[in-house]
Length: 142
Image (cartoon, rainbow, N blue to C red):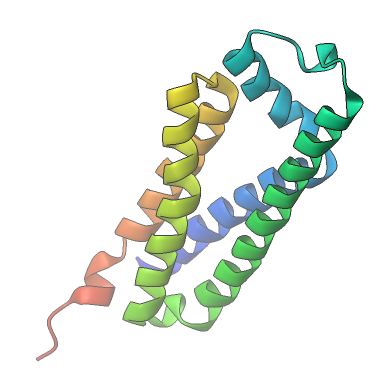
C-alpha cells in the first residue's frame, strides 16, 4: 500500500504543481473566476490597471508559495514518507490540509465553482493517498 500511496501522492503533487504554475504564469484565469463571483463584475472591467496589477501579483506570489510547498513535499515524499516515517505522514497531512482544505473551504464560501472543483479534486486524491497506508505508519510495534 505504501508504494501505491506514494504514486497517488506524487500525482496530487504534480497536480498541485501545475495549479501553482498556472497561478504564476496565467493568474488571470484563476483570479477572474473568484473575482466575478465575489464582485459580480468582470476582471476586465477594473478601471484602474494598478488595482489589477496588485491582484495579479498577489496571485503569482500565491503560486510561488504553492510551488515551494509542492517541491518540499516531493522531498518529504521520497526521503521519508515512502520509508514510513511518522513525521513525514504528519508533515504531509498538515501541508495538504492547509493547502487543499483551506482552498476548498475558502472557495466554497465565496461560491467560486472552478476553484472549488480544482481544490476538491486535489483534496480527494490527497486524502486517498495519505489514508491508504495509515497502518504502515501507525501499526503497533511488537
